[in-house]
Image 1 (cartoon, helix red, strand yellow):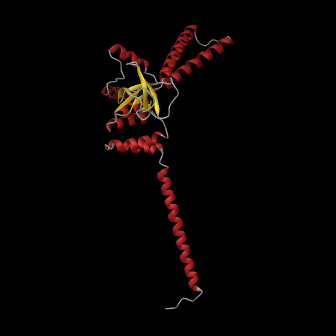
Image 2 (cartoon, rainbow, N blue to C red; image 1 turned 135 degrees about the horizontal axis):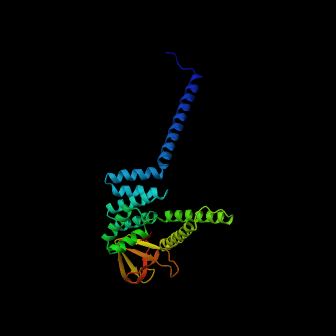
Length: 268
């Protein structure tokens, strides 16, 4: 066997060094790409993964996926699924919170209404009123979502605006009766929309802990005046200056108000 000469030894070492550097660079690039691929999981992917975990009965794991997905996009379906996962995981307060959010996005969806009422009945704070006629009126009031009411109001307004424009140029393309009917419809829709927006903007929250101890002031040294059970909805008050870590709430049914830690109540 021929021996390596002095000039061949550095060359062989250089080749080995180049191979090692190339291997290291490729390995590092592969690790970076793999990390980015994991990190780049889209909200839709997280949502679908949550659905799979939910179907497998892994409700707490499904909640984690849904919560992560909710940071990337908003959907009544996502909020509804979150409510279902929390409900199955035994966290009724969190379930009601997300059912309420889904309801606000799509108030006419039957499954959302059913599950929201089921959960609120469980905690003794039912969503639907008592009696056949009140329930019918409630369902009719919420049968259309805010977005649908806005769309219909806009379309009717455009129709009336176009009719008025043609009338100014002496070219009526619709009857006076139709214009009157559409005007009444526009007033009804805008009034309906205004009431719905007023209700929607009313700051509300849900008790998400087993019980919320409502104190007379924003500090643990203040005495507990009363408690609110998990899943009950409360009004968020702004009568005083906000205090970090605390929320001032009201319970209209009992006519009571006080302060709770902000970990006890989440805003709808």
